[in-house]
Image (cartoon, rainbow, N blue to C red):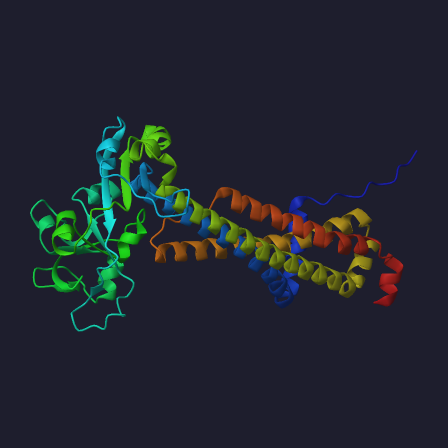
Length: 400
């Protein structure tokens, strides 16, 4: 009894060899098709990587600044009028057990800030003037770019510390004893310039003078506009819950309490939404790339009918042909996807380096890119593979 021979099987090495030969035979078309996949994957990797690097930088900054800073300020009363905080609020909040330090600042709305006394009055540049206390610097986690901070001696005299943006607008690069600005109708000596203060950004465009100096020289009435409270990190929410009642026991509903680090986190959430939009655009580019792969494979089937017919006549089964063309589509997609991963990672590294951020490309993004590449390649190559397998060997050889 004789048995018919079984058709041989294509090993993974054979599939790679056949796919590689077919791709090398059409380098320009392959490069253009792979480019679509590469652009889509690169866009998605870069968007995720840059967003993740940005969040890593935010977390690094929050770790350095601390998330245990709370702010309190006067809100409005039942009639919609601006409320006030009692003078004793600083002392009362300081008696809360977990509170490490508390300070206050007061607005000086009538004290305009100019580089000199010859600047027209309307050209104040939007710079705010504030009366502050000596412990503001440590409470809000601010640092000095140059000069010194207000102390028990200078806080009573016409000395001022400028925010980072204020110094830029006034054209001041550093603080020294010879530098003066026109503030509230008199000269103040610039003794210091702050670095940017992420947790209290309004200080960046501010001019800070001592609380007693404001009362002595600028008719400051001592009204508190904001309180800044640094607490034990493990008791932030507990302090937050009693802060309004402590700051103004008689009218706690007129006190607004916030946590500056949450504002930074909210900004990161906005970035996340924007990231989702960019990921959608990357997915569109990836879809276009998949269509390009499918188009390339369909044209390849039409051009290689004689090759398919010859292989079928030599014993290749329909399964062999399907696997061959499906393998080519997957190899083409992997080529584009690998290039896209390298490009996306490179773009992330360059951008993060320019921004002085840590470079972070999540492993899930790379795995997701590879998975998306394989899915796109499989879907794009399925129809051409089936079509190639249906080619009759006699018709293909006759057409050749």
